[in-house]
Amino acid sequence: MTAIAGHYAPSRKPGVLGVHSVGEFVLGVPSLEKAEAFYGAFGLHVAEQGEHLGLHTAGDGYRWGRVVPAARKAMHHIAFHCFEEDLPRFKSSIEAQGIRLLDPPPGFDSNGLWLRDQDGTLLEIRVGVKTTPDAKAVVELKPTPSATRNAPYRRKAQREMPRRLSHILMFTPDVDRAIAFYTRALGLRVSDRSGDVIAFLHGVHGSDHHLMAFVKSEAPGLHHLSWDVPSLAAIGLGAMAMADKGFSHGWGLGRHVLGSNYFHYVRDPFGSWCEFSADIDYVPADVDWEEASHPLEDGFYLWGPTPPPDFVTNTEAGRS
Image (tube, rainbow, N blue to C red; front, side):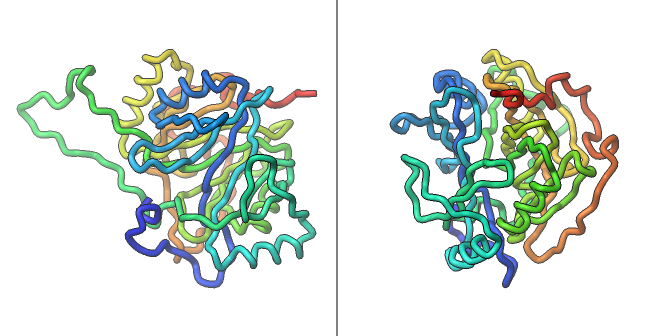
């Protein structure tokens, strides 16, 4: 988040065209009231903005997402940020690939480029701050002294809130088509994958192991939004805070293999998930990460409880 604070110029890979960040997501849901309760309990600052809810990180106030009213839960659009000098290059590149550029949807006027991905999800490429970190995020593990009680009373525990959006994972009927679109149109690169079942893509200008990921399903849809927290304690206290508010259905604590992050997922009221994530792998701008395909049984999670049966259920599938 140093780029947002403006302390120094964000990292970039010279001469390479690619978006550098997820700037914002806009999610349609059938109940703003339920969304406000869930995301507020999760640790985000939820602010009413007209008919929308803005989802901000409490520490810096950055708006990572908006929740808008809709008949059914679905991603309205995802906005990706690029460097100012790259926007004309993106326009030329997208047009050269025969991808149709669209007008902004009603209520979302901007000077960005609007297009649909291989599954019809609406995307925007716009000039914006680099929200991905320029170095691996620091994960806190404070030493504890002997001859003292180191854990506080539960009522006195100081919970650390999410620092930023780490990544978005979407369902797709065709993982290879998703890879082809997002690498060619947006300039993302594959970090790791498990055959045609799941793939993780990073930004070329320095980003977490993945800022977008895709998992195979019979239809498009949102699987989860992942939020970076600074410690394992933040994951545990976040999970307990959610359970105290009635959001107890989840999966964790565990550790992934691809990405290496520690996790706890909580199911939202609409059938998708939010992830508390810490210590994810990082791909610097000056490194060409070697893409690899891994056995699914080895690449899902290193340790943790058995995932709940509905963890890979796409609640957006089967719609008429």
